[in-house]
Length: 356
Image 1 (cartoon, one colour):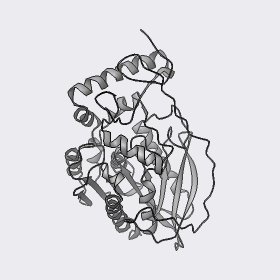
Image 2 (cartoon, one colour):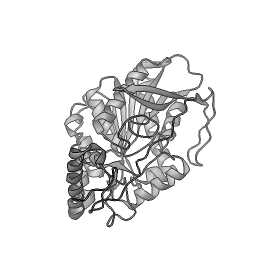
Image 3 (cartoon, helix red, strand yellow):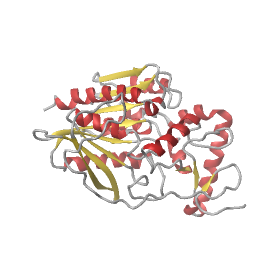
Image 4 (cartoon, one colour):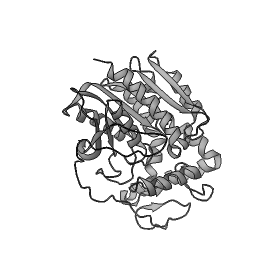
C-alpha cells in the first residue's frame, strides 16, 4: 500500500502532505489594568472599563494559556465564568465578546485555548479529544479557585457548539459549577455526523477513519488530518461539511483569529462519534442551566438540542430559542451575537451575582 509523508490529508486516495500547524511562541504580557477595550461593532457597545491579563495553568502536565478578564473597581471577590470554544477554535474566535459582556456585568471571565490548539502547548497539534477538553475546563476551574480576587464559591461555565456540550457534562459532574450557559451545543456526535454527512458522505468519512486507525497503528506520526470545513464538501471530505462554516471562519481568521487553523486530526472525528451528553444531562439536578438554540439550526441540530434540554431534571433551567438565526450567524452577525451575549450575561448575573 502506498503511503505519503506524515500529517496527511484524506482525499480517498493516498494523500498529499498537509502542513502541520504550529503556533508561534507565546509572549506572556500583562495588559495594563483599567484598559478600555474598543467597541467591536455598532450593535454591541461596551462602555465599561476592564482589565485583561495573560494567564497560564497546567492541565495534566500541559501548559494551557488564556486571558482573564476582570471587572474594574470590583469591591471584594467576584464570581467568574470559564469559556472555551468549539471545533478547532482559538480564544480570539467570538469568545472575547462574551467575556467582555460578562466583565461589564461584574463577572470575571477566563477564556482559554485547549491543549493542542492556539497558544497552548500539547501534541499532536489540532487534536480534539472532548474528554481532555473537559478536563481542561476542570483545571481552569481549579486555577480560578486559587486566583486572588475570585470567589471560588461562585463559578460558572459557558460553551458554544462542541463546548456547549462540554458544559452540559460539567454541570452534571462538577459541583463547583454553579451555573452554565450552553449555546448551540453538540449533544450527540454520532447522530450529528450521520445526518450532516448523509449516507454517501458518511461512508467516505468512515472509510477515512478506518484508514487513519491503521496508519496510527503502524506509526502515530502518520496520522491523517482533514479540514474543519470545506467550500466544496462534495469534492473534499471535512469534519463539518458546510461551505458557510468555511467562509465564516476564513473571514474571522483574517480579522480577529489568525491562529485559527482549518484542520483537525482524523482521530478527532473518530472521538466525536462516541460523544454523547445525554447520559450526563440527567444528572443536572440543581445546577441552573440555560440553553441557547438557533431556530432551525441544521449544523448541530436544534431538534437534538431541545431533546437533550428536555431531559434535564432541574427546574432551574431556561431554553432560549433565537428566531431568524442560524448556527453560523451567531458568529458572522454581531447583532445576533449581541442578543445571545445579553441573554447569557443576564443569566449569569441572576445566578452568580445574587448568590452569596
